Image (tube, rainbow, N blue to C red; front, side, top):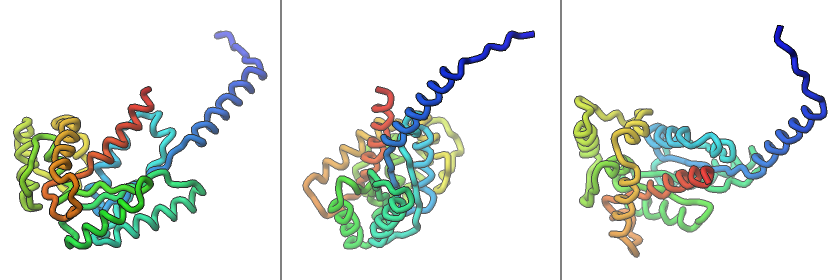
Length: 235
């Protein structure tokens, strides 16, 4: 019969106190990040997958809420602000960062510019990861740099061609796919996408006519912020 080793109660209590202290410290350091998306599935699915890819340590100290609203006018920003307030009342904690994710194609130029400016006015607590014309531009930048205007009608074929060039014969793009993050991670290059997005952003430096920045996306800013959480945890 195996020998049963008894652990002294004092040792058990010390371990319990250390664990409780660790949990208290985690709660004290916990950051709350709210990501509110115009789309109900495409963008939320991507960011949920990215979140799940972060190290466990990051998820212990960061609380994420990712919401797809279906709002596609300047009311999106107001809705995002309301969701932030609701979450703060629910948790009795300050939301550290609110990100608003939206595309140009669903907005009039005036509404799009107003939505961007509303986010800028509330920085650094609020920021926006907008795309012109559509979020799919972020996918394309994982493969190549594009600096000519792209219509929504062209995105599907271009995404399909890029994946097929990577060996996925017969690949068909599904807009609300839950697999896009994983596919891009395996067959695309996120670092290249960030470089390409920054390069596009620089071409419009100093201009505030955001509705005319086509193509352009600031999704890289949100992705980098989340990736930096990973780097800090690794350190």
